[in-house]
Length: 201
Image (cartoon, rainbow, N blue to C red):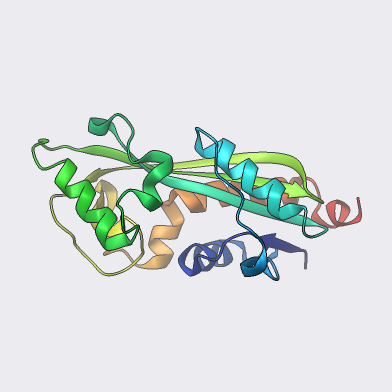
C-alpha cells in the first residue's frame, strides 16, 4: 500500500487523516519532523501556507507528502481568526483561543455563522502536484459543549447534527468535516492517478 507522508505533529489531525485514508493508503508522520526547522508561514491564505509547508518539508524526503493549513472563519469578525486560528490568543492553547473567540463575539447575536476551512497541498519529491480545499458550515455558540475533538470543536455547532463537533463521535464528525472533505479529494486524486504510478515517477 502506498505510503504518503504527513507533515504534522498534531496528533488530532493525524488521527483524522489516518481514519479517512485507511482503505487507500498509509499515512505516516514525516520521519524526523521534530528536528526539521518549521518554515515561516508568510502566506495570506490557507492555500499559500499549506504550499509553503508542503514544499519545505517535502524537500526532506522522496515520495508523496502533504501538509495542511486549516482554521475557522467567523463571518461577524470578517473571517477571523482565519489563518491565525491556532495562535489567536497569546497563549495559543485551545482553551485560550476558544475563550478569546467567545469574548470577541460576546455582543454578536445569533446565528453567529462560521466555517471550518482546510487546505491540503500535495507534493512529490518537494514539487507541488495539487491543492485540495474542504469546508464545513456551522455556528459559534456562547459556551462550550462536549470534550471530543480539538481546536474550536466545543463551540462549533453543526446544525445537521444538532450538537457541536465537541459532542459528535469522531467517525461522525470525520464524515462531514473540512479536513475529511479535503482529504477525500486528495485520496480521489491518488486513486485516479494510480498511486503506484505516482510512486514510480
